[in-house]
Image (cartoon, rainbow, N blue to C red; front, side, top):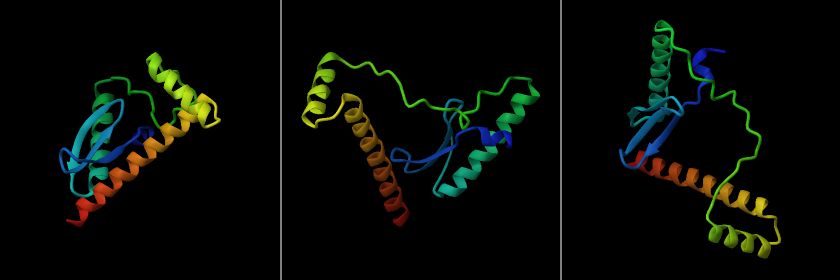
Length: 127
């Protein structure tokens, strides 16, 4: 595996900038942009290779891999007591556990946000 393949590369549409923006979460912030998603991805790969080269030349340890990270499916979330109560009541009304209810809400919200972003990007491409 190439070193650059150890890191998550994200290219996403930016409403603020009205273009695609590339980043390496947890290491390199927004570092390239353009109108073509594929070109921005290639730019991002080149930037990542340059950063790896600089780190190695300066004998700086590379950050931990983000693509190899394993997720347990569990995390602890702290919320205020009113929201906790409201979620618990909604879960009971849906005859679901609080865990399953919250998981469905999060999944629906994240997937909907992805669809919305994709639609905005496609409409911007059509202009």
